Image 1 (cartoon, rainbow, N blue to C red):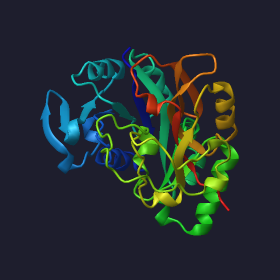
Image 2 (cartoon, rainbow, N blue to C red):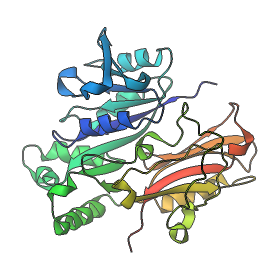
Image 3 (cartoon, rainbow, N blue to C red):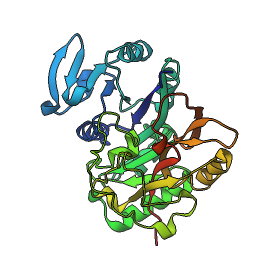
Length: 322
């Protein structure tokens, strides 16, 4: 069975920092081959030092990544990208600054072999609330925000602490199940957006053990542990986002009540951003369990996997506030 390629949709209003986020993720790809799809090359600015060549409307990027323009044919471009050899490990779809993410998502879901995991919306902290109330662009901005599975509140260095607190309260009141990350220059932990497994960047056998995760006593249903199998790729924190999120590994040896696991995640939906692992289901067989896009995804797992990695679920979540 060929596993579906995960896709992340990146939306947000003009000037919020979408392309800054894309460039950041490309620089922290962790060995993944990422395909970036943009509406028009004229609307995006991939950092020049990441571009290694251009041919037939495709920019070749560092590390085996590519950037393609989809114009009016997103479905056809995605299908073509998935036929590339080697196949991409992940796809980023950057929408137009005035585009509606849910409309793009509907098209992306038509592509066989692609799994749309989440919509990440980038918002500009100094202007987002005013734009959402604007009589001319407010409908577009509010729809973009409503489509978010994760909101990056960007450029928080341009607002004072009181304004940031007010914006966080405003967001939570309207979107209690959607996590918010305050960011500067879209500096986020790449693993929180792209997932936890870098297929081509396995940890060396003699690598140092992972540091003790922080906040274990507050983990609740998420279940931190500091003793993962040595073959598990570690998620790396990216400052200053390390002050905003916490991550860990949930150890689930033996048969797992998958529905109870999902219920625990749903109870923490406003904080949990990403989770992914392979577990032994109580009903029998291995299943892939994931949390992305504010919902759980459970699928039978039939591919070969090291038995040492069964029963471990990696997760990343917003830190609890004191």
